Length: 50
Image 1 (cartoon, rainbow, N blue to C red):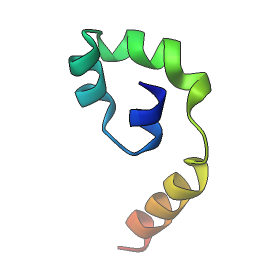
Image 2 (tube, one colour):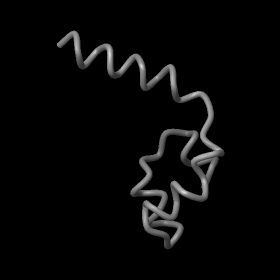
Image 3 (cartoon, rainbow, N blue to C red):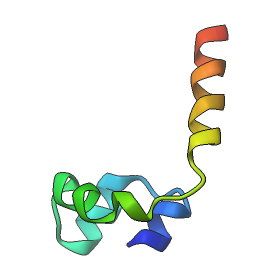
């Protein structure tokens, strides 16, 4: 699941495939997410500039 999340698969899709709820998935795998802060910052900047 951590591989899928880090690949950018949306959490609801990963949760469904894993048979989990999103809340459980993120509670268990949140610590495994890596490198998404820069992507999130860019998306926020782009949204604010629009």
